[in-house]
Image (cartoon, rainbow, N blue to C red; front, side, top):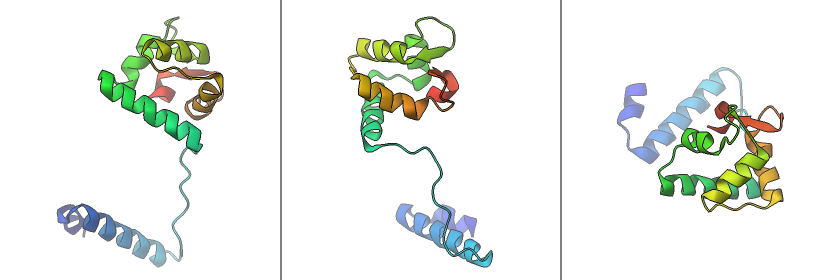
Length: 120
């Protein structure tokens, strides 16, 4: 069946995969797929992250390259202030509330700094 899924065009492939997942869950006695437990973005943070992603594409930068560029202290971690200043240099100005929204998403361990692993 995975061969069938691989040959199906885009939408059909997603539909077949969804049906297969639903059948597998039903076989296990699960009526509904578990809810997504990935990071929860506020719509404000989503908008900012999308804008930042667009900027990276426009500047042809990978997230890790941007990180190295804005890690002013060179310690492998970026503080909120470094992030805000580094992005401002690229023309991406953020208010303090924008910064707080972004930090709440990318600072996964809540330490106040973002490692390259968290950033990427």
